[in-house]
Length: 187
Image (tube, rainbow, N blue to C red; front, side, top):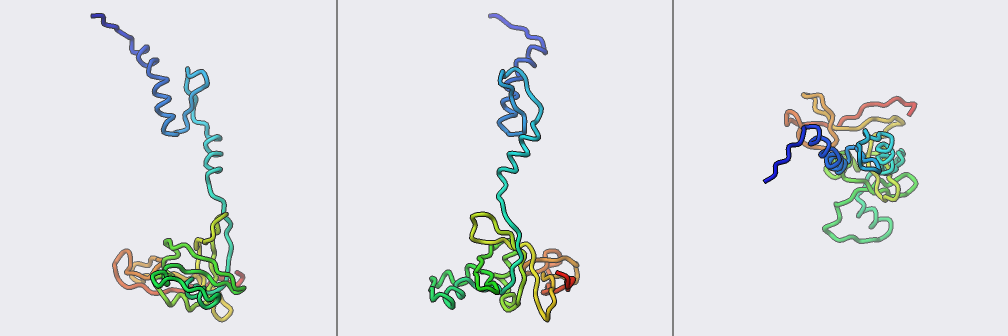
């Protein structure tokens, strides 16, 4: 039986390329040189370009109108009947010029599904519209009344924290209220 005794430097050198390949598999920015003999430090510029290429493109726009149930607007405007189980599934902004913009049901859009009072208010929504997507994501909500613009959210008077849907306070579990704060009239 032969026993090979390797110095600690030989062991470290024999593990360098496999370890570099292992680290590269996690996309930590480490790359192997073409000759596979040494490891190069993270290529930050290349990594930044890859991230930028993967980011979806969008534009942010402000649209005015009222939020409606999409099924009701389709029936009223185009005589399109949807299945009964889909009547309260999707909301849309019906703009002042008559367009219907479907709204994503996320943490900002969920309030329009839970509080029917929001369907009766003239609104200005700041929307994020992604390329090649028919739906818009709500960024900010403003109510419009008497020529003024108000930032709209839900508020807990006890905990003094804003929320974006009608529910019990996230902190104290107490009641919250619909709050309007006047925005500078220059907007």
